[in-house]
Amino acid sequence: MEDLENFVSDYTEDKKHLHLAIGIIREKDIEYHSFSNNKKKSMIPPENMLFEIGSITKVFTSILLLEMEQEKLVSSDDVVGKFVQNVKNDYLNKITLKSLATHTSGLPVLATNHILTKKRSNPFSIYTEEDLTAFLSNADYTDSIGSFEYSNIGMGLLGNILCKVSGSTYDELLKKYITRPLKMNETAVMLHSEQNSRFLNGHASTGRRVPHWDLSIYEGAGGIKSSVSDLSLFVQANLNDDHPIASTLQKSHLPIWIGNSNRYFGWGEDKLLDKCILWHNGGTSGFNSYLALNKELRVGIVLLSNYSFFTNSLMDYYIAQLIKWITKKEPSQGTMIDSTGKKIFEAIMQR
Image 1 (tube, rainbow, N blue to C red):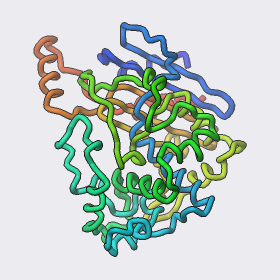
Image 2: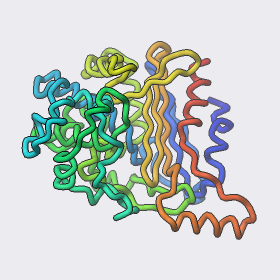
Image 3: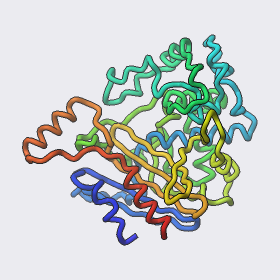
Image 4: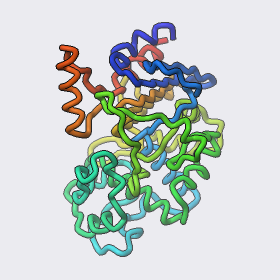
């Protein structure tokens, strides 16, 4: 796209360390673009740079559930209580694996005993399986079952259950069911040494470098690292029907009426130009991502950025004030990459 720079200019402005990778996907073709404000040129091809993709991981976890259901290892209608056997709580027998995958279990965004401020720089690393067990022992969100409530702890629990049932790590499940069949060789939670050399540093919205996140038992909710080339292959697989896991991906595209709305396994639904798109975004303390596709037109998009849309410490506030004092200008605000992605995707769909 010749005019792509015009679409991204608002987002790229004032981001000194930015690497932005974009994949534009059609049924038989993938087109890569990249933007960098870093004066030190990288030898790594932009399409092979690795980013934290945050909550886009949830789409993968939901597809793992559907793949394991196809092998009859679990059923999406199994109650959660079946797999949390050291906890006696009737609420867990009222919600299912499908409830977790569609964010309709009533579980909150985070467990109530997860205090993020204990370790702001890496807040999920300190939450243990014992903490999860303690939370589930007393959890009761019966009144909210069937209503949409975006839940990191719910999707983390689902990933945890799938690992326990299979006796595998999350990465082993990913490789078996998704990344190996789709030849996505750069997508994993745990990176090997060569991949780590291509794993970008993440930055808060102020530009301050921040540590990478370790998701611990939340890895099914946001632990994956990937590249724009791999995620473009994933989107392309969702647009085509002639690959090893086509039937599972197609099932994830089907709406399920729950409560008073349509829900999907992992995906969100939106409207662009009066057409339905399936999408998900992701954010960690140093990265922001967006992925969307339209089955009717057979097009999709991936955007990966090593800038977060939020700040996660008081230090960021003081840095912003210092920048304002030195430059006499308001510091750039953290913005989600979604709006940029939607503008580009609309242009692609119109063409």
